[in-house]
Length: 597
Image (cartoon, rainbow, N blue to C red; front, top):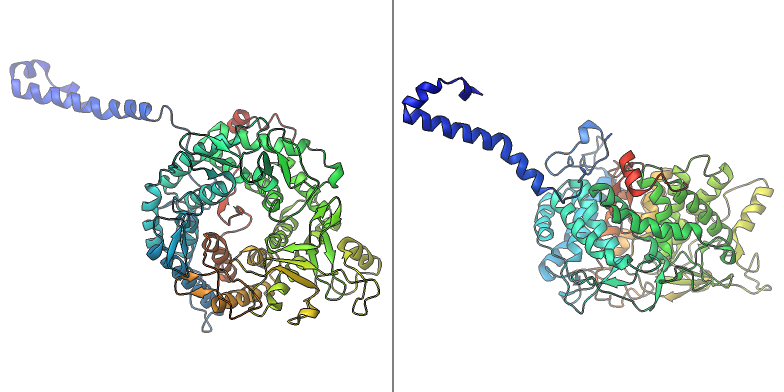
């Protein structure tokens, strides 16, 4: 140091220079040594925190202000004039601004807006759910001022609950935790990871059961838990729809319980005996024992995202978790073999439930997520996991199921699909029936193969329009359209996987019908009867409408792939998470290497 070169005898004879020298030495000591000491104390009990992106992120997309460059604007003017798809994407953005503006004006500080009465409701914990669910949609749409304003709201979230209140595990994880993690991955804003870490830790007591399956809900302050309406039971979707969120959070923070608690659930599934249900997972499980309590199997409300998360665990972890991947392939093949049926006249392909191995022929709008998952698997699974025969069937099933999802929209007077239908089973002697009864799709595919595969595969041709009730081959059990995203989600994935523009056009038809029927002054309202254009709507605008429906429509209409499907994975609430790979030290700490993968 320069001070060491001074003549000490001169300093001793002159008090002012001596004082200056002493102060200089002390200042240098503080500058070089004290900060390191303070930092080591500050972070002594803090987990390892990763930047939001994987190491090989292209240099031109590396984090800047918020951690990510603004996505390239998808609406640059077309060289030959107006870009139709850009205009349509802008229309979706305007719809988002209308919906979110209604929330900000009438329901700020609450979970969701009541669009018909300009009121508010706290549907899930009262922490401001719509704000959290909208973060990544705002980012992708380039709404930076809205995003920055929302960050201020998130920064002040404490996730506090009164002693008598409980946060539902499933909804809180996929909506709040998924939303925070996705917004962090896109923006790199550290407050989002801090809040995600807080919430992830507060929700862990839900997994402190004897089996490891989650209990229904937890009080985030006391850690007390309680059962829900199923009392002592865990729905299968609840059990598995936490894998992506907690494993990505473990990757970001290095907290071992985040990984181990949810991986223990997967180990239960790997060991399950599914002989009685033909390799399909029952919908309800005993929370304490970790065993099935029913023989009902489905890809509907009680099970949907569990099947989805098997494939997506493998994708999210850099395609390394082959145990989850293989379980997905086994399950998808079982779904195709046992749950897919074809109507006799219109050849509508649908997926249904089994109870005591008998089909109910119920088809839910929720199940319209399945075409997207099957298409994603057909696109990404390697040859050693999926044979050419299986790959062709998975993709055909995806296209056929999506055709039926579209038919439900096209058939209705409003252009919007009912929430649940039951497919007819015509009598054997029906004069209007070609095949007599709804037949297993796999049988129809085998016949098509044997006949030389002439024409389109069964169920994959464009469905014939059927506005008349007698021509539809189904009855509407639940006539409402609840602003749901599943069909447009699958349209989006199929567009990206196949490049078939029909899926974009169908998404636009859904959007136009939504604008005509569901848009109100206070946002968007669920439709009570899809065959009654005059009937009033339902006084609700679920947060998933902004998180999923509008996001998938926007992505469907942007020419540039803002969220590449080989580098990002959507959770079941449409919150994208980036693909990552475990390091050697993580494999050792979490015990990943010790598992038979």
